[in-house]
Length: 490
Ligand SMILES: NC(=O)c1ccc[n+]([C@@H]2O[C@H](COP(=O)([O-])OP(=O)(O)OC[C@H]3O[C@@H](n4cnc5c(N)ncnc54)[C@H](O)[C@@H]3O)[C@@H](O)[C@H]2O)c1
Image (tube, rainbow, N blue to C red; front, side, top):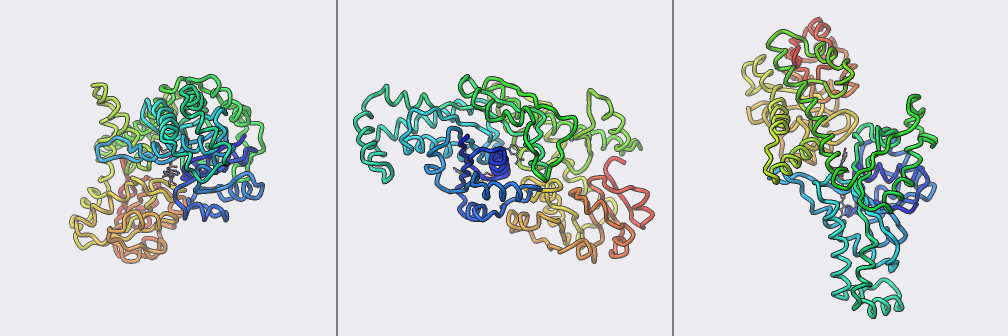
């Protein structure tokens, strides 16, 4: 199939490169020219295990291309994905300006293509509030109508004289305009990939959700996803072999609104599990229980499951916080107070400052101390630092007068460019970080931190405090190495 993807970030790039791997022709579009230039020569602008190999194979096979020109990218596409960002606004609602620009761009590109009567399926992969599918359809259609009405297209450079004349004569006809816009069909296809395991999640998803009010669109999407549903492709190298238990992937087809709600509800539930673990951790700490044993004990219950039950400094990233805020906003629009969701956020916010309290408890005075943060990314195996707890911890410590050093194996550059005003010392390795620290705080559970030789680490530091914000170390081993070890809920 011929596919256009608008937005070449974590979701768009992984989706595009994966669909090209499965044999489709994929045109990826982004407004960030620098990103596109990098991608054209096979350089990934994001860190994601396995993505380089997919980009390279797509480019080599001529099935994957990158451009800033949406009109050109949509010329032959029957499917267009919207995978642009939907960041959070100050009031908690999502900023839909990128989605709006994409929808209007699609309307325009349909006209520019001169291939009016072809069915164009717009797939919304961006996480958007309930009702946005209809809104995107309306925006694309409105754009078509208004461009025709203003005859803006007649002055376009693109297109041949003939089709311009056809348009000019037909444009006065309302049925013609309606026919063009009726060829636009919007589908919600929420994305559940996790950064760090995005390729695996794309090729071996737990389920595929398609929300559409139009049977035609549903059929096309089922065809597009057939290889994933049937699991009958040869897996890319980085995720080979396929899990032996995976024979097929369930398809959930719904109306547009339910699909949009599924995405928000899934993220809210996952965030709730982590906040729940943190709440129990805080109580465990007071009572003398060990959160690691407690969560193991409850996670083995098949009704609960053992994932997303790790206590620590809280969840972060580009999705959970903004999606829960958006869901809260939606509920309030309908005069419903979502108390559980509000608590999920509040617990998380409090949890982020826990390391600072623990440092205060151990060091008494923070002012003038040197504190080292192990990790900046919101989770391991990504360079994504959006809404990462590291920001709250670092800012609070700076505010309290500490000297703050940081190290992350991958996310240093992205953190520095996202927070240029933070007066941090960026260390080039764990040894440099620890060298003059009174205390270390584990913020991200990178594998290379788990493997650290605690005795050697202790020997490097003048201080002895180790706040393990992700419970990655064995408390006994840390104590034996000489550390004043402080975990979360243990
Ligand atoms: N990152 C995740 O783990 C994840 C997982 C599931 C769902 N989502 C959702 O998917 C969407 C995309 O997330 P992301 O993390 O990939 O975002 P991102 O910020 O990494 O990427 C968005 C890209 O869109 C581009 N863009 C913006 N406006 C554009 C336009 N008009 N035309 C072309 N390109 C444009 C930006 O330049 C950027 O490269 C969001 O709604 C997010 O909530 C993200």
